[in-house]
Image (cartoon, rainbow, N blue to C red; front, top):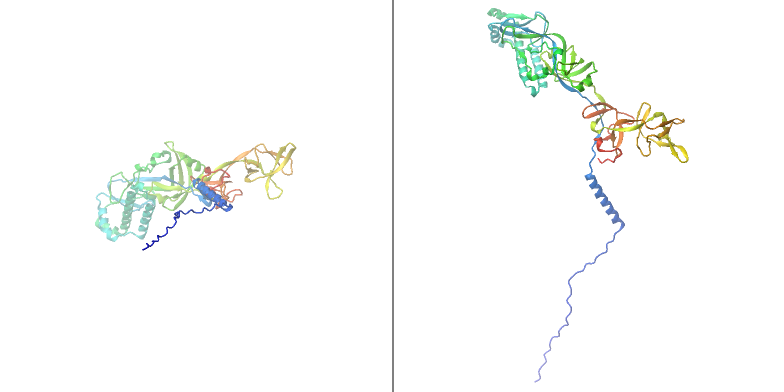
Length: 479
């Protein structure tokens, strides 16, 4: 039997293995004009921002209308005509005239008794029958208000002075009213006391210190040392010894206020015959005759003489006040914004107009190989004073020392050379520093008040450099 032939499957021809790597197509970089411009702008902006950040900013000040009130505070000692009255016997004293009241000759001022019986009687009988009048209460309120307005933590002892003064005044009011209401009862009770009347007319005060007889010729800096100052106030009901001060009387409305002054004060006020002062906490202004003298220690003192308001200070020896200066109105600018600049002085009558009839300047002589000619030079005027204009010094297209200018319609010549300086500030309204002249009217340590409405000066709301030393004229300003 014939063998069957088994058919073998055909083998496929081997094919090379396909690569899975994908190669991207690179598009060519097309640089166009727009990209270049954008790149340049971007670089410029980065550079500008970095320069701006690193650059020191110029601070500016906006000019405002204002004034300088340069009032100065002082402490003065009061000198007046006053005489201390002493007790002619020992005993308990009771007062019947309140502090600061004017008493005529014969007015009952105080009483004194050796046993203190009147004090006991008044204490037992006046509490229910005697009260303070509305006028009494009003006076006490005024004193408390004045104290609260002038209180200084560094002068705490004034609290006790005020306390004793108020206590004495309340007792005086009570005793004064008691004599009218309890006089008959005291007679019935057989209370014996001696009444003392005023032998001089004047203002009565119960605060006694060591300066009642002080004269300007004895003034020295030592009398202003308030830490060593003492004042004795005798209260009603107190036992006093014979010969002890019991009260004092101020016999004249004329009084003086003496205070130490500095060398600068002497220059500021030395030529003035009167000054206006304002007393702290009293809402009171007064004008006094002013003079300067030398104390026993060689120091300089000022003296103000007044002929009224003495009674307001009858209980005081020292008083705080300020000298009121005149208010000067104008433009207010910082001291740090002011600088100086030199200018050439050119006669006013040499100015002329250019060909367009709108530009002003001067005709300047120029020299060349072909001879001498005249050229019109437009010129900015910075200031006018008397017969001269102030013009720029050192400008490239301007004038220099030795140049000649020609007077219009004349053969007269003027040689540039004379110069002067002006105070001014740098105006930056246009984005760069421009010198503007100022005329100072008043000043203090921080500000100047300058004249407003000047032809070549500043105006309200102008922007000026706060620190003139930080810029140069013509410099671009980054605010």
